[in-house]
Amino acid sequence: MAEKLRIYGGTHLHGVVTVNGGKNAALAIIPAVLLAGEPCTIENLPNVNDINALEDILQSLGAIVSRTENSMTIDPRRINSTVVSEAFASRLRASYYFVGAMLGVYGKADVALPGGCAIGARPIDQHIKGFEALGATVSTDDGHIVADANGGLVGSEIYLDMPSVGATINIMLAAASAKGNTTIVNVAKEPHIVDLANFLNAMGGWVKGAGTDTIRIRGGRPMHGCTYAIIPDQIETGTLMIAAAATRGDVLIRGALPTHMEALTAKLLEMGAKVDEGIGEDSIRVRAEGVLRHVNIKTQPYPGFPTDLQQPMSALLSTAKGTSVINETLFENRHRHLDELRKMGGISSVEDNRRIATIEGVPALHGASVTATDLRAGAALVIAGLMADGITDIYDIKYIDRGYEHLEQKLCALGAIIERMSADE
Ligand code: UD1
Image (cartoon, rainbow, N blue to C red):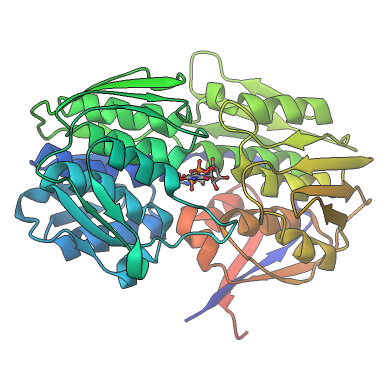
């Protein structure tokens, strides 16, 4: 049954909230369990639909999976298939990480092209280039990524044309099982790349340099099962920080890593919000009152401003004093939610082949019926609904449920008034 969120806007968020484990880290680490060849337990997992989709893929391959709300034990020893059908792969982007993992461990993979948010063309040429450099044959005919290791992957030197998160992860997964040494240059430096490297090392792998431009891997080492806890979710942390500022609230976010949030923190400070990092503990306090100033944002790979936070940020900027410009450099289709914000009184225009959005701050937004077009667009609309006068109904919240655990419950505990109800009501 389709559901919607009904938000009664105008409340100020106050209190303490705890961040869940990183979705994008979990999406890389769960397929990596195949490399252990033994059971692994992953803790601090977010309880979101993307993780459910990975669980279904693992079970379809023959893995034994047991689950609590925030942990998953995966036994890969009975895996008897290397095929992920379209019905499973289309549910999320990260399904393609099974290509890297299975290619290394089982020597072949046949995974339907991935789904995920429609935020741009999202080519996979860098993933394929990496697999081929390791000695694999890869085709993408008939909507499937079909890869064959031709008797075994061999370590190599790989230069990425851009620091792609997905290609970095996929090549790390394959190279960890390849014979010999691999160097990957111009890699992504996002926190979940470091988390994956730590997990591979916890299983007995040898991965150095994660978090810098170059990752070195000694492949083919014997791996073993382990228990591993995922890092806090950078994007959920950022979403809550923005929501606190947007509602002119005062929120202490616990379980967060302030060093992952520096680009956002800098922008919130520039706007006039107050951001305090917890001393001696992993927490961030965000406070704001009165009118906030406009800022310009350019999305960049980490440690630049995350593309995943520009959409939530655009909601906050809708009522900032002055004109803000958001330059989206990574994905060409990531301003569609501005059409929805316009229904709430937001003023914006998008130019330069859909990359550059100009947002004119208005004194206030008003409630309206709006539709989420992707995950972070959904988060932007929730923030807009919290800020708006009156009632906002958000449809297609399946996108929000893909990546945020109990978002409305967390916000309600901070004083928001949000109901989840049938979309027909
Ligand atoms: C990941 C995140 C997503 C985030 C994005 C950027 C996951 C599951 N998703 O997506 O939330 O918005 O990083 O931080 O972790 N590109 C190519 N060829 C390739 C691969 C990428 O041209 O082979 C381009 C893309 O079109 C894009 C840019 O590189 O312009 C960055 O994409 P990438 O970092 O790969 O993003 P994802 O891994 O898809």
